[in-house]
Length: 380
Image (cartoon, rainbow, N blue to C red; front, side, top):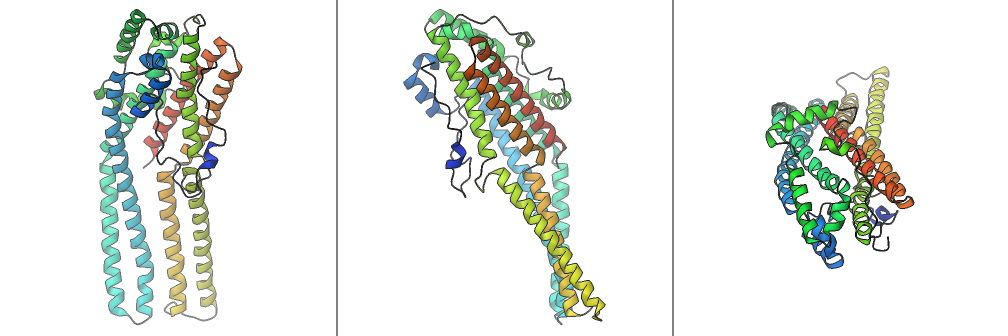
């Protein structure tokens, strides 16, 4: 496999600066959506580009990718805004009595009115998010479609290796290859059926729907070895395995902007705020024990700090659970390990083992998608 693309180094994520976004500037070019990726492949292996470039799939993918990203951003913005406004209302309400205890009656009235307004606004935003379930359904449906299209790209190749390898240098085989993949493209679900497909996927615990075409559930006979087949397999290794390993490593990386690090930092902050709330409440109790009244400024301050810290902890936990569900972080770790194992099988095996590894990768990708859909279907 002298023509194989080199895998990314195992410590690729270690080169990401501590405060950098691990996905900033990163392009998922596994199905050659990016024109620069197509240009690079065409310059190095023009015969491979003949087979691996799929303009029709690319156009349909982009058609669904844009609404998926739009609805995801909309749902996230609405949820974050409602939580932040609600926390602001609670914190302001917590400190409102303190203004009264300090002799600022007018200030207390203004703060109380503002807190009430923010609470109503937070409730309205939360209601809007609940009523915007259609937006979330469209996001998950579009994301389901794009990932199934990504799977189709590789499943057609894995189940037609002989034809695809011959199509690299034979024009008649290239025509047959394009007809085969055009027929496979018709197997993708229609846009009007996405909601039903999403529901079905969350229930497919037996992995019955890994392969988009039922005929692909049984592996075809292994093709004859050839330089073209070696090149095709090395490209599939790079596009299907290396890219997914790089992506999941970035999600799990040590950069402070990586989801795993942000989730860990948020959990530590929630713990600190909880301790602060308990300590402030304890201080209020001690002051009351020593004869201070509830209206005393010190008691009011301790109660305000306790209530505000508790509100901040609850809000931060809600944001953390919404942005970085624990199930997502577990899924990233599992998917990375599964992809690394598949790549190791590919690198250490004969032709049949490499094909088996590529087929196993399709099962891993399907289970990862199913986990994503199930997690975000349940989340609010």
